[in-house]
Each structure stands twice: as structure tokens, then as C-alpha cells.
Length: 508
Ligand code: TNX
Image (cartoon, rainbow, N blue to C red; front, side, top):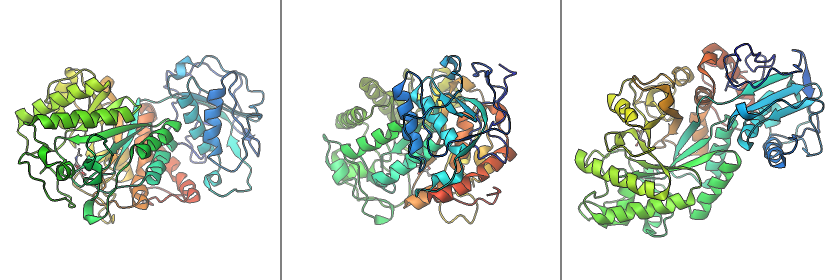
């Protein structure tokens, strides 16, 4: 209720090694109960050497939590340990599908959740309450002290994501897994993979094999490119699932298809294979919307990708098909929507598909830079839901500042304050907050060639995106966020993670 104490350890003070995703505070309707035994402000739990998570009666949940925690550091965790005398809390129903309750008392730590995802998120918060040295890949001799208190926390939005463009430059599986780690750390739960574009096709398709073998052999700048086999892709999906991250595959249609056309010229409007493309222009290519073979291709590809994908979403792109006339484009999108419906997946498309006929359950990913878009508002009235990726706030390929060595600036410069300074629930005129499924920060990679560069652009902006996606509006507070974020520099340093030392942040 409104009078619920957020807890003495609510990670909000500059002295707390805190979660940039502010846990839900006094305004949250989520707190199931006022805890019977509240720890006093000076309390700590000392987890030295024998920390373990246990959840009475649910081995699967405690296993998930322990796996997450054991990755965090050097202590040997065992199921035998216990969270001491902390009383079992009341019900977990109000914690929802992803919420958790974290109790830290002198005799131990308890994380309570209704689901494995909730427990996992609770462990991420606990991890941030531990000293920065736990992030070191090498064992460290240090006592693990956690500030005492109680946190009840659950997300504002169900969809919290980031996108990696593996088409402009190809990134091998280990790089993608590392990006998953970064998402999970900040309680983001979707990784959108942009799997095809003019410069490369990145996923093996049995029924159209040359897409990968020929279409995958290029990238921006003329490098060797690459593609994921089905086994590679499954490995990414499985790894992500263990961290409660859902992979959202995108096959960009009908534009951004030059790589596919080099492999299968019958899909091209003039039936001639174009040369491979290694530049950075957009909007010049498209599959022939007037040829039935195009729809066979779309059905085969989307069918195979759907079959590889346990998650609910299938993204069909739809952006920047500048050379396709509006009516042909709308007919193409309608057929693609029908094909996706046939796979049983929920369709996501860039917001350019909005004018095409509505399809049940469809989700538009909005990447505009204004705060008023009548075409989108109209699509929402017809039943579409939105993933918000405002390019001037969430595009991680934008430069931080004029002197940032890599990145675009067409949507403006995005420093951390700019990334943090918007409200997903009230961003678009005439779009109610209920239509917003969540937010996503895309990283396009025309100018990004390595994991180091990915991390440089992700961090420290990704935690800003994560806090907007997770925390209630009532806790939105730039000075507080800035100070909490500062404590993450030493954590990234300890973990060997590259980040941009944004001058706005008072790094510790
Ligand atoms: C626009 S945003 C694109 C991409 C580019 C990006 C660069 C969108 C759906 N399309 O093709 O990579 O700008 O910022």
C-alpha cells in the first residue's frame, strides 16, 4: 500500500552500491505485506563463504537463483546453506511474473518470487548490493557484506529490450552471449537480433541455403561476414533463456534485402543478381512484391526461424522500403502478417507497417524522433501495441557527444541524461500507457566492428534504458540515478567490461 516502507536499504543512496533500476518504492501497489521483521538501518548480512539461496519447497527456483549467484563470484555456493531465521513472507502472487522480494538481515538473505524469472531478477539486485570485487573473474579474498533491509520490486513494463544488428557487421556467438549477460544484469528480458540486411544474411535457412552461404559472406567495409547455423542460434536462445532473456529474431522485409537478392536473383524485381553491398546506405533494395515466389520465400524463411524460436515474437522488419509503392507495400505486409499468424507467433514490425491492415495482436516498434505520430496513434486505436524505441533517446548507435569516435548522429547526440530523459508511459501523443508493451534500445552496427565497441556504446546508457523500462515513474530522478550509476564503473572495471566514462557521471 501507499504507506509501505521501501526499506532502509532501498538502493537509492549514493553510499549504496545500488541497482540503477530503482526498485519500486512507496508508490508501488506491489508490496504484499509490511514485513514482520524489518532490519535496522545499520544491519548487514555477512555472506562470507557460505552463501546459498534456498526457497522452501521449490528446488527449481533455488537452483535458478544459485546458478545466477555462483556466476557472480568466487564463493562456493551450496544448497545446504540457508537464509537463517528470516520469516517466510506472505503470498507471492502480488510479485507478478517477474517481481521479487529481497530480505537482507543479519542472519541471512532471502529472495522470494513467484517465478524463476523473479528470483533471477532478485539475484541481480543482490549482486549489485555486493562489493564491486564480486565482478572480478578471479577469486578475491573479501567478505561479502550486504546492507540490511527489504525490497519489493517488480517491473513497470513487460517488454524490456535491446537490439543487436548482426547484419551490418557480423558478431560471433560468444559476443552475443556477452551482450545477453549485460541485458540480464539490468533486468532486460528481450534480445532482438536483426538477422538480415543489405550487407549480410546471418541465419542458416535449410530451404534456401544460399541465403547464408552467399548472402552471409559480406559485411560493411568488405570483411568476411558470417552466419549462425541452427545450432549456433539455438545456443544463443538457450543461453539467453537461462538468464530469462527471450530472443526476438528479425528478418527485415521487403526492403533491406540486397544480401538475399545476391543469393536468389529470382526474388529481385528485375530478376538480376545485384552486386554484394558493403556500404551504409539504406532503402534501395527490395524483394519483388508482385512475384509469388517471394511469398514462398517469406513463408519458408519465417517458418524455419519460427521453428527455431521458442519465444512468442517474430519480427518482420518493414522499415525503409522506399522503392516499393504504398499499395504494393501494404499488400506485402498483409500477406507477411498472415504468414506470421500461421506460424503461431506474435508479429512485430517497425512502425512503417502501421498503415497496412491491422492484424490481431500485432506490435509496432516505433523509432520516430517526434512525440506526435497520428498514424501510430490510429494503429493503436485499431488494436496495435507498441515497443518504443525513440531514436533520439534509445538509439545506442548515436554518438554520446560530437567527439565520440564511432556512431551516427542523424537522430542527435545521446548522452546518458538524454537516454534517461523521457517517459515511456507518456511519450507519444494520443497513445495511452496501456498500449505500450515496453521499450527497446537498438544498436545498429554500420560503424561497430567489435565487442569492445559494442560495450562502449551500450554502457553506461543501457542501465538508463533499463531503469525507464523497470522502475515506476515516481522514482524517476536524474541526480539519484546519476549517483547510483557512478557506482557501476568499478563493477565494470572489475569485470573487464569496456564502458564510456561519460563526463556527466561522477564515477567512483
Ligand atoms: C535506420 S531504424 C534504420 C537502420 C539504420 C539506422 C541507423 C530502422 C528501422 N532503420 O537501417 O541502421 O537507421 O541509425
